[in-house]
Amino acid sequence: MGDMRNWEHLHGVDFAATGKVIHVYKLPGQHKATKTQWHLKQGDKTSAISAARIYFDSCSVNGEMHTIVFYVGPHPPDGQYEPKFSSAQWVKRES
Image (cartoon, rainbow, N blue to C red; front, side, top):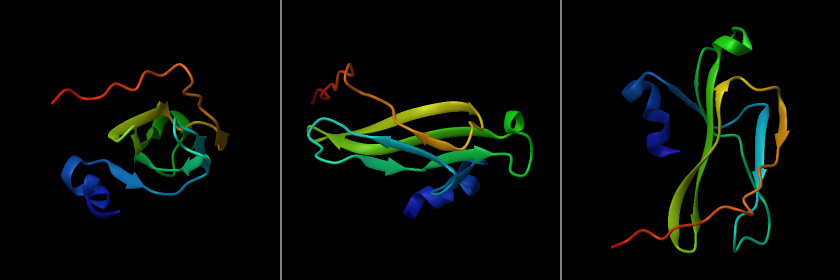
């Protein structure tokens, strides 16, 4: 995880690599789906409304790195979510 573990120290928000909320997605050029539980969090052992979460992943599409944000808000119900990216436009960065 490297620098990801430093989020709490650097920004006052904790990074977690595992949890009970899973995002499963497939991007252009991928043959199989990717699963991630990565999230930034603030508020443990409290109510869902008081437990802010940002679920995300980083990935490469057409040779360009992207950060995908799946959800921002109070802790969602535990489970598996399958976001679709069929209408996404993957823009290549200008040099």
